[in-house]
Image 1 (cartoon, rainbow, N blue to C red):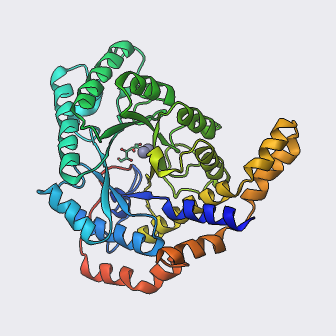
Image 2 (cartoon, rainbow, N blue to C red):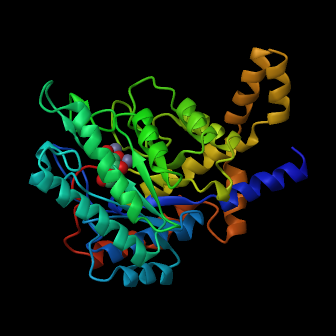
Length: 390
Ligand code: AOS
Ligand code: ZN
Ligand code: ZN
């Protein structure tokens, strides 16, 4: 590769921003059991402290996503200032309209207007919090749906959803966006009100430019071509955010790039082709994970590195040669060019990028040597549970 190309690859990698989720630092589990770990954060501030460690070692994770009410605090501007003092920023605000008893039959799509009002009030509160923290994005994931055919009117639920989304959209400031996540199923098992990218896209299109789709990589049916969805949404200017994680079965929320690094590469290749790696594209590269059996901070560091590795490989694809092969209908050369990039060991390149950023060449080793794990184990007693499996 020419010097010029290498410099461009390195600069794209150095400017990548990966946002880590506050809830991933806390205890989490499955519906069967939450295994508690020693030293996990007890407060939003301690989650930020952990996120700051990830940033310190990797250099590309300066944002931490908040989740309300799990990160409820008295003064959100002070929380944002606390983060800045530690070298990170509070990022996306995640709303939670799935945890109260009131939401048994839904939140913004609930048949009872009083419950819908309560859910909408919460979403509005989240925008107030964004105002205080200076966050750009409100992430909406609705667990709303039904378990049985006939349980509720599918069309009426879409009307209610649309009404709530419009109210939130109207409330957003000029610089703020909402990103609407979709999920095939769970906790609703028959119909989900935002089950797929098409539903999210249709609502976002109607709302306007500050409504964008969030692609959680774990929220699709097995075999779904996620990179196609990514390519399509980017082409339409409607890809707002990722929730990266890995899945073997459904919404497993395992470390990004652990189950299928090749899929992550294919996704990031489409991001690159669609211009999504440019900071102006405004895509939030978030992780949405739970570390149930593995130590949390190193698992998050590993996930950040996995996203970086997939990005580096995507950037190595020789697009000029690929275009030639594609025009010539040379299937095997075209496929070979993608595989060459995927099979390149990008770890030394990323170590250089990190060093140039003032981070650590080997973040996993640096964290292990830092003494942070021992310190928090000693200092933090009675760590917090994230809430519900994310
Ligand atoms: C739920 O399955 C989703 O992935 C959401 O992104 C959720 O809001 C997030 O995990 C925090 O609860
Ligand atoms: Zn998610
Ligand atoms: Zn999920």
